[in-house]
Length: 335
Image (cartoon, rainbow, N blue to C red; front, side):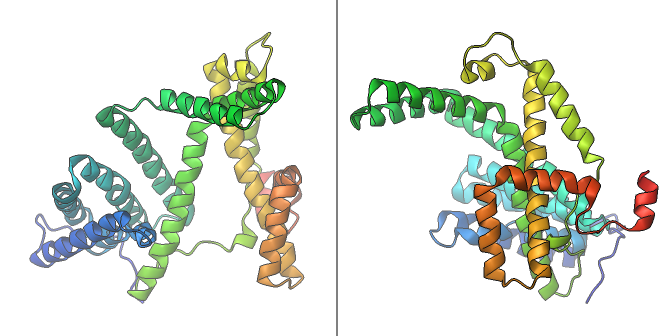
């Protein structure tokens, strides 16, 4: 296996071999981008950042940046200018970020965080770009969808009392989604980068490149320092909550900016601790030699039927360390 060099290309120009390889990778990247429009093959687009990532590792950032520009121009010529911008944002920029993190020998955590931030920022830009170029008002679209859903319920002959309950619950869910939109988008970016890192690891391994592997799921654990993030979320949510609001939907409509930040932090913490809780359950099932299908079924059952138990299990693990993963010297350093 070839080890990834930390040194970048020190030449003042891009060699002919690097240019040829960059052209090939740009073409491959465009093909993976166009696959998005092909039914049943769109799943292959998850490997979209890999050509750029590999080019960064092999030829450095200069050749990769040039290949990104070429790929963006080709894709824009084929699919349109707007689609070309989205292609560069969602594919090439993520590949550049992950490639640089791997080339500079960052840890898996730092690589995933950097990739997630790039993907998150790219998603925000893409959303505003689509809204601006296509003249889409996201809030009006959501409200229109809510009204259409209520018309469907009316056509199903629900009573007026039931319609009021459904409307109140729907208003609550819509307002909540507006509030936690940032945390949901950030979580989606993390999942996307996580999957793309696994795909990149498998492809690069076949090509003879070793990159830091992801830790086994059963050994995932959060430091107790993350509790400060949870405490910050609780405090900000409390300070940002409005007073004298009659319904839960009105609370979200009049919540202060501090409350919005606090709720997003709480939702991110809930997702993190819930994931660690599932990891703990999976670890103990593995310890008792439960078959893989059994582990999956039990974890799915608890995820849907005992969410709060799983969440608090992950939270308390930061102090209790149920699996005894923390080394004695780490415990001493934390005190």
